Figure (cartoon, rainbow, N blue to C red):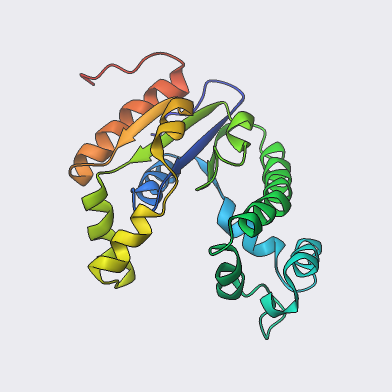
Length: 210
């Protein structure tokens, strides 16, 4: 039987840089009965054909960011914003409030239990302040590079560039309530998640001997 909060709803934000193991942690939480809201999937829905958010992006970045099916061409948009810090800041200013509002609306429809908000930019967007608890998943850079090479079929140089381009960890660590260190085996990661889950649902510090 999975443990659940004794009463009410707990909003748990889970974040981490690329290939840190965030998705693995989220899968473990879902197996425990947590409800899951993926910020990236919400964003994809909001930039679908005919959606108001897509129209706002087209106004700022031009019709070249629209794919043949009428949805957002993320590769075309990325080519614009990842080489222009000001454009990237504009993108975040347009998209973050819309995504946060939609996620918060979905959270409000869930009256009880643990609701996991899974978001890469949970802290940078300010959405962490809407969460009851924030977990940060971290991993050694070499492990991130290896996972990226295997998962995305990338060369080592490309994987290293992607890891190096991630936001710095220090501000995330300072804001997080719990650090999940994914530096060992899957079993070691699961043990951390189990302990953190018990603490989360009980409101008491976890007993590491359990």
